[in-house]
Image (cartoon, rainbow over all chains, first blue to last red; front, top):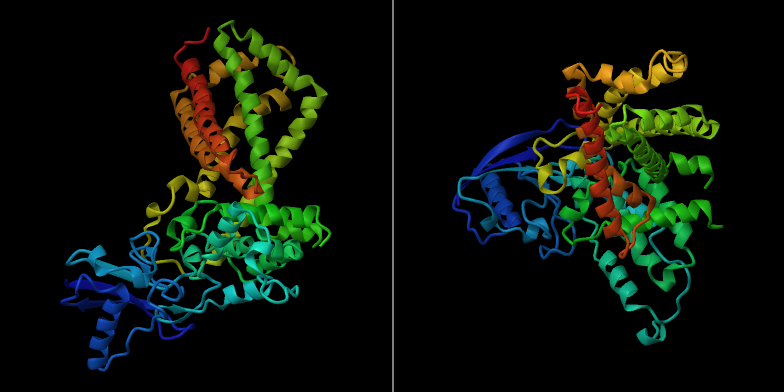
Length: 249
Length: 222
C-alpha cells in the first residue's frame, strides 16, 4: 500500500505546530497503524530528519498510551479499538490519512503526537481509591456482591484511561473517564464509605483541570475502545447530586 | 461543598440546564394544548376563554414569572457552558469526522437555542407583548384569535414560525432525554420509555405548533 500521511509536527508545548505531508510506500495491510508509523520514522531517521514522537507501550490494546486522532476520530475509523489494534487493511491504497494529537486544554501537547495526560492521574489521586484498611485478601465468596453490580463495576473498570473520550468530545469533557473511575468503586461494597466524598473531590479536580462540560452527545461512548457506557455518567451525576444535597460527607 | 460551589461546578450547571429545560418542556405542553383549541373551529371561542383564564388568574401569572426566570436561567447557563467549553479546547482539530460518533443536533444545541431565541423574540413581540403590555386585548378592541389571523396573513411570518418549530424539534430531540441523563435520572427499566416519549414529544408538539400558522394562513380555521 502507498499512502500519503499528514502528521501534526510540533517541537514542544509552546511551539507552533503544523501538519507535514509524508509519503510511505509498500506498507503491508497486515501492519498495525503504529508499525506503519515506525516505518515512516525509519525513513525519517535515514534522511537525518527528526522522527515523529508518539506514545505507545503494550501494543495489545490494554495500556491506553497510543493516542492518535486519525482522520477525524480518536484511534481511527474502527470502533472499539486502540491505535495499536488498528490495521492498515482498514485503509485503501492511495489514501490520505490525517494524524493529529488529542486536543484539549487539559492535555497539552508535549511533542508532535504525544500529549500530557497527567490531568487524569490527578483526578484519580483526588479520590479514585479506597483508603479503608481491607486487611488480607478474603475468600471471594465471603463478600456477597450481586452479579449485575459485579458486572457493571467490571465494565467500568475496563477503562484504560487513554483519553479518547476527551479527544472525541466536542467540549473536551472528561466525564466518561471520571464517571467510570467513580462507578467502579461506587458499585462495590468496599467503595461505599467514601462514595460521596469521592465523587465530590474527583469532580472538583476534573473541573480544576479545565476539561469541558458534558453535552450528552454520546461521542465518548462511541469512540471508547473499551465501550464504557454513558450510564456511568448518569450514575456519577446522580451520586454528585446526592453528595451535595443529602449526604453528610 | 457549599451550594454556591455546587452551581459553579460543571455538573451543577448541567443540573440547572436540565431542570430549566424540563420546566420549559412542561410549559410547551400547556401552550400547545391551549392553542390547539383554535382547531375546534368555533371562531376561537374556546381558545379565547382559555387565554383569558391564563391571562387573568393570579396563580398562572405568578407561574409566568417563574417561567420567564427559568427561560433566562436556561439562556444564561447555556452561554456560560458554551464559553467554558470553548476554553476547554483552545486549539481545534484540523480535520474532524464528528458525524461518525454523534448526531449533528446533539452537537448544535447552542446554535439551535440561538435560533429559538431569535424566533422567540419575534413570537413574544407578536402576541405576548400585545396581550400583556398593551390594552388591545383587555379593552376588547382586539382578540388574540383575530391577532393570530392578522399576523399569519404574511407568508414570510409563517415561514419564520415553521423554521422556529423545526429548530424546536431538533432542540427537543436531544434535550428531552439529555435532561434526564444530566440529572442522573436513568434506569434500565424506564430510560427506554423516557427516550420514546421524548422522540414522540419532540416531533408531535412542534408539528402541532407549525400547523397553527399554516392553517391560519390558508384560512382553514374559521
